Length: 211
Image (cartoon, rainbow, N blue to C red; front, top):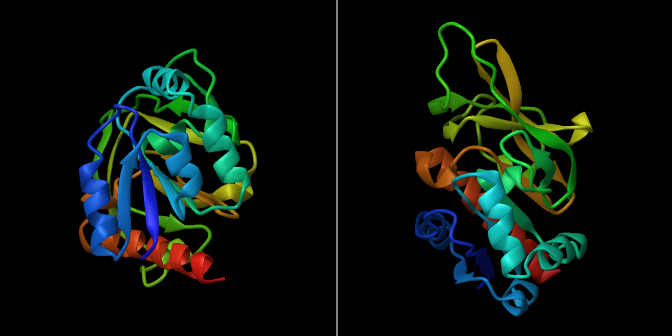
């Protein structure tokens, strides 16, 4: 059974993400120990809250270089919500440097008539990397659940795996590059579609373990 380490850094409820991964057939381990991340078959970085406290928590645990090394090693890695944003170089939400895995910044939605900030609720994805393993068995416009006031803006457009439109703004909803995948929405709150995405990730981890 594939073992997926779920990083614990006091930024959100980890158990709902674990539940979805376990339903897909994985064994999860909630941990903040570098050795566990290095030993696991895959790593998930969830998170809710603000950018600066998240980075401060990771740094205080000595996890920044470990996460960077895990991703560089080719191990499957999935970021969720805040776990997507902190992969970038920095955020308009604060002043702390991010992990710097993906070139670009995190920006705030601009106000316009008729839209709410945060962007909260169900919205449909436009898949820009439809061949991605993470999207297997999804429809071209799948509905998922969002809660965010900030969005990622990658320098390299080819890392975008999906977009979402809120008001007049179409922004990145997911990124993918090699073994690294991350989503702005909450798959663990996105019903059947979200469980399918988590199941797809688990299947990808299994195929990596078997190679």
